[in-house]
Image: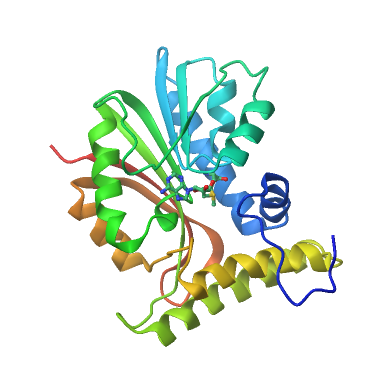
Length: 256
Ligand SMILES: C[S@@+](CC[C@H](N)C(=O)[O-])C[C@H]1O[C@@H](n2cnc3c(N)ncnc32)[C@H](O)[C@@H]1O
């Protein structure tokens, strides 16, 4: 780990670095706990449930499903093979061994109306803006009757539409809070880890790999996809960043 370079270290294809970055962030850990808790609750009355985790990454978001007695089948989809390999290794002796599918979460063929629970943890903000509604429509198309999607998302404070400067300011505001909290929880946060977190913000600034949005845009996309919000909870921080910025866990159902 060389801290002397000017470039922030990258975690995009490095599952170990990704998990170091996640574990150092109280905001992400509280969102993942709440996401796994919501999945647990939805599975509590299920019998041999089918679960899908879109953009599953290294599998932090499928943790509760891999251990749950009421899960029959678990699918994970991600476009990063290195993350999938890491995930497969991690859950190789879990109660439910996930079937991991390599491909694009928007277009990879999946069985329609099949999944009782669909997990979307930090997934929506990795889909380019022009494909976000298509992504959520495809979520709707794969949920079984009576099924639910759990969406865990980093939501930016408000910014001016179509204004790149205002957008970048919102990203900076969000990650300033993330870093304050990471340093509050570990006063000697290693420079390498701090720079991994700064790399996430850099992706947001560059409009590459990270396409976070504000709360009104998220809600508009959910509605446009024919989904309704069954529950919504901000899990971090206690006081929102701006009016609505922070980390949320929502449950979504199909309208009709
Ligand atoms: C921030 S990680 C979230 C991983 C996991 N859900 C979690 O909560 O830890 C985002 C993941 O989305 C994946 N990803 C980004 N765009 C994708 C796409 N179009 N199709 C499938 N996976 C994608 C990345 O490879 C990465 O693993």
